[in-house]
Image (tube, rainbow, N blue to C red; front, side, top):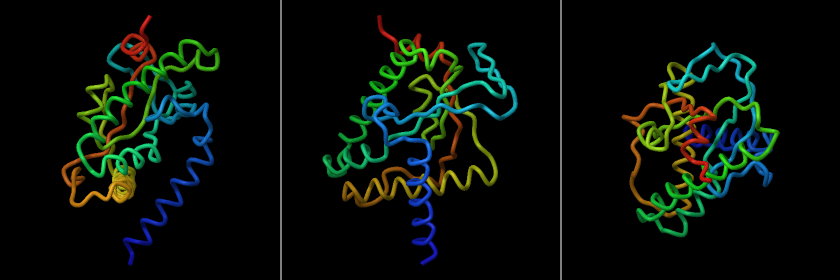
Length: 188
């Protein structure tokens, strides 16, 4: 009973989050797999490995996996591995589209980096992100939210059993500088 209540709370949070940040609009989509919005950084100053410094007040793009699209992929694939491969390819295409948008639109000229949260830290490194593990309450809350979202996605695809175990996974903050994104994903 408590688990179902917690699931409802996270679903409501997800719905409100999408509405608050306008992630339902077409200009918040980079192809199919990524939703994004502008934010101002409010943490301590950090330096990324490529030398990019991010100070409080700098503009960032927060990225999110498009859950509705992920559920659609799972439903079409009926739980086969094809959905994961398709999502990986679509995520790469979405990063390319986001790089093109950041290069072309003046609105994104001052963006210093991309950021987000993931339980797939090792996989995120494959795309060029650096990862920093979250700690404490924030990490536990984010992991619980990830469980709810993955459960909903599995239900959409009628998937039985577990394809991703969160017991050994930690939630990580992911970062990629603007320069890294443009260098890796902007094709002339």
